[in-house]
Amino acid sequence: MNATRDSKGQPVAAALAGLGNHGLTIQNAVAESGLYNIVAVYDPDEREAGASSKRFDCVAADSFEGLIATPGLEAVVLVSPNHLHRAQCEAAFAAGLHVFVEKPIANFVTDGVAIVQAAQQSGRLLMVGHHMRRTASARLGEQLIREGKLGEVAAVEIHFSADNTRRMPPDAWRLRPDMCPLLPMMQLGIHAVDLMHAWFGGVSAVTARGRSITTKEGVYDAVSGLIELESGIDVTIVSTYCTQVLFEVRVAGTLGTLHFLPHSLWFRSTEDTDRAGRGPGKLHDFSGATPDAYTLQMMEFAEAVRNGGPIETSGEVGLKALAVVEAMNTSVEQSATVDLKELSTPVS
Image (cartoon, rainbow, N blue to C red; front, side, top):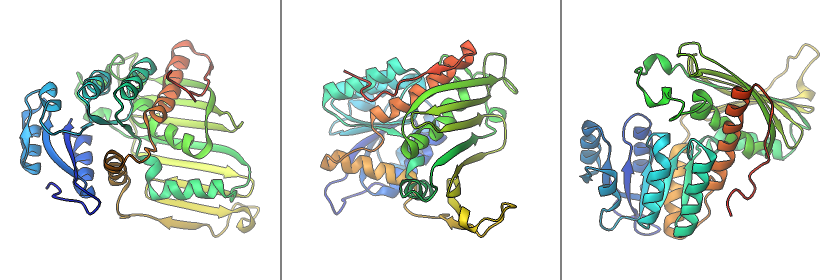
């Protein structure tokens, strides 16, 4: 269902590209936000295109080029395969459109930089779909850290995984390193990298190792790494595409410990912990919180398009997360630690 009018002004006339799988999640967030008028959709799968066209009562374009040429269009929402992001973003900016692109911004930093430059040259907005930092549990975790409730952070442990390879056909684009390098870290672990940036700041170096467990040699479905933050904190990170779903972050500090999950956050102060590690920690349950993080990001994008407001997960933010994953990929290939200077000014 399309919005007819939002209390703050006319809804944003937008088009959707990439409609299946995660694209459906973004469709739901767009609809839930009530801030968009979807005027066209596109997907190479005609069934997906037909279903979404019916849902939003709009035209189904027969190509991406036709989609962005839709009269009256203001913005395009891209949930397409990673390797298509650069060409599609550049075409959309050349057409004068604002762009929301699902993470990662691109597969390679050079392509991400080109996307950010195209946005700057066009004078249009660019948002990258790093939603995880917008969850209520992530916001509370950031608040506790900023307020010093954990004291000095000593260690961070991250595990972002899902058992996706067993549901993927052999010719899936995600199983091609040229279309999706360092598979689990690019698709899942990058969420953790962005969350880490939001909570702790920049990265100075990475060391990583990859394994092929359910995939052919050279296609890694399990990646582990050590990330050295500019603050001096060490972060251990694991991301797989071949084990059960698990998204969690554990942070240990001198004054307390927290355990982050996408829909909850547990915190315990050292004052309440005995020598055996027992104590009455507090669990904050955000299950069913509305609007959810996906809807919040789509609301932010629409409001920025309409009112020129700031975008939290900008192209530059997306580049910083991608740079860490690219450095991890280099570390795996070279079996070496890779120094990484934070991209504070990633484009000229």
